[in-house]
Length: 357
Image 1: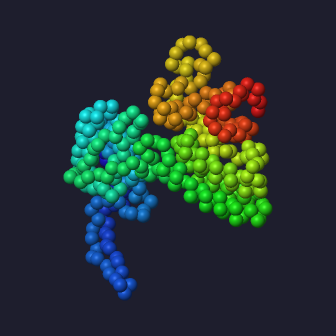
Image 2: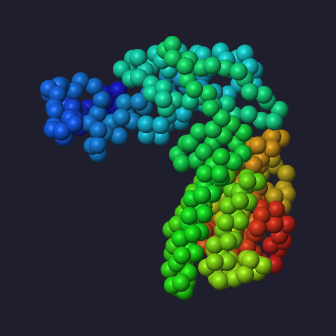
Image 3: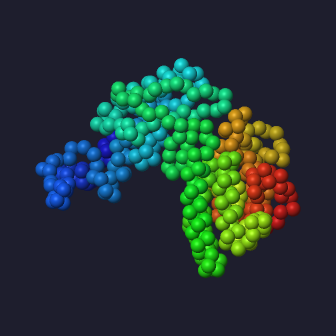
């Protein structure tokens, strides 16, 4: 705590909270009688289930990124840590990986921590041109399992960033929501069905959509969404859903992807550069966001590149209010409900010159 300049009364308060704590183990035998161990003083760790526990743990591991910052990048979210290593050269990649494991092992040992090998995995991100590097990762003489996909903050990320596994997991969940709405159609209450749609279907569909919404596999989710829309409006399978989406005030999957992505871009717009900041040539696109330079399709489908490109095609009136996120969100929603896009390409093909509020 003193390392982070926490001293005086605040330090003494936390010290009194952690010092002289005792714990014991309580179990039940086959006759459901309680069996207790002796009380033992707690010399390490933080009290589980406490309000301060997570905060104190974050303080405890806060210097982990510093230990490996020269060779790898770390991302910490609560007690979930991801370490990213990048290198074009296979030999250098292996060397950096091994060095990272050594530094990580030293840090764990110095901080009296141990790695949970059952929840630690090694995942390689690949492109079509790059083959997988055969590598068995070991730390402290124990091997880490190699995998092709993993769940991270509710999203299933695979080695090729295709999002196929994530969408496959979403499908049964959304089918259940479809079943719920179908069973409630006897109510004939548009308000109830709309509430159920947003709570059971939309909340699941929209989570992380800025990452997987432009995947070709997302068509499976869109098909379920159209089925639900027809159920809610008691329409036939041959009826077009574009008008129904507009009537219900709901966004199709691709339009929701555009909406969510543009809101994200508007929120972090200051992190992007304008074309006028890159060059001095006066063009009609000076106030557009500068697209990251890349020829890799995987990167072009990513959040940063796609977000800038979709933003740049917006009507000038919408872009001019993007600094006011609340107003931007309102006007953007109205715009997208007016056109109801079934794909991102429809947005690029749309001529917004005659668009009015």
